[in-house]
Image (tube, rainbow, N blue to C red; front, side, top):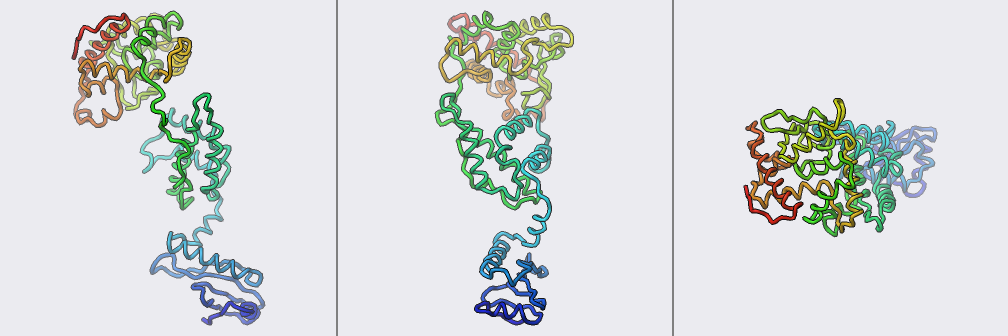
Length: 420
C-alpha cells in the first residue's frame, strides 16, 4: 500500500490519478481510497477489539471537497474514543441510524421495568410520585430531547430553570425539586445504558442543585405537652367527628395516617381475643408490605367502635376522613389557627413522639419497632424470619403504657411512674 504525504497538492493529484488506497503519512490508520475518475473517500481502518478482524469506517465519501484538517481531527477523535472508551465508530453510526427514543418515551418504559435495578414493580404511590415529578418539572425542559442529544449542558440548564421555578423564600421553598429531578433523570439514564441506547450518563458529575437535607436542620417536630393537650381537648370543638377520630387514633397507636384513614369496616377485628385493627399488606403507607394487626388499647378501641356505629355497610370506617390528606389538612389548618410556632407539627411526628415516650417508659427498642411497624428494624431482626409470633400481648401492653401517659399529659397530671 503506497504512502501519501498530505502536504501541498499531493492529495489532489492522488484523487485525479488511478484507483489505489493510500496510507497517509503522520496520520496512523487514516487512508485515502481512490476509486478512479476523480472519485475518492477518506476512511480509517481499526480493530474494534484486540485480535478482532479489522474494520473500515468511512469519514467522507467526497474526498475532493472535504477539508483535510477536519478529516484528520475526526479520525483522531474516533480512534481515541475507541482506545480509551471502547467506542466502535461503526457501531455508533448504526445506533444513530436507528430512531432513538426521547427522554419521555424512555421514562415511560423505565417506570414499568423490573430487573437488576428494580426487583419488583413500583407501588402505586411511588409511581404517582415519579409521574408527578416528571410531568411538573422535567418534561417541559428535557422531555422531547432524544437520548443521544442529552448532554451535561442540557441537564444543567434544565436544573437551573427547575430550581428557579421552585424557589420561594417567603414560603420556605428551597427548590429541592431540582435535586429530585436530577436523581430521577440520572436513574432513567443509567437504565438506558443497560439497554445500550446511550454509552454515558450525562448526569454523572453534575452537582446537586440543592441539598436534600435542610441546612437549618429538621423542619418539623413532635408537639409539646401543652400543644398535645390543646389538640386533644380542644380539637373536637373545631374538627369534624370523623377527623377527630382519625387524629386521636393516630396519636394513640402511632401508625401512618394513610394506614388509619383508609381503613375499611372489615379491618376492625373486635371479636378477637385481643381486639385489633388490621392493616393489610397492600394498604397505602404500609411500607413493610406485610399484614399487620394493631392491638387496640381501651381509648383506641372506643374510637373504632364509635366509627363502626357511625358508618354503614360498604362505607369506609372513617366516613368523611377516608383519605390520607383530609385529616392532615385539618391538622395544618388547626395548628395555624392556634398559632403554634415553627417548625410545624405533622401527623407523622406523632410516631416519633410515641417512640420517645415508650422509650422513656422503658419499652424495649425491638418492641417499639414492632409496635410502630418500622421497615428497616424489622428486616434486620433474625426472629422476623424464623418466628411467626405476633407479639400482640406485648405490643398491647406498650400501647396501654403510652395511653396512660397520654392521659396524664392531656389532663395535666404529674406522671405516676408506671414503667415497662
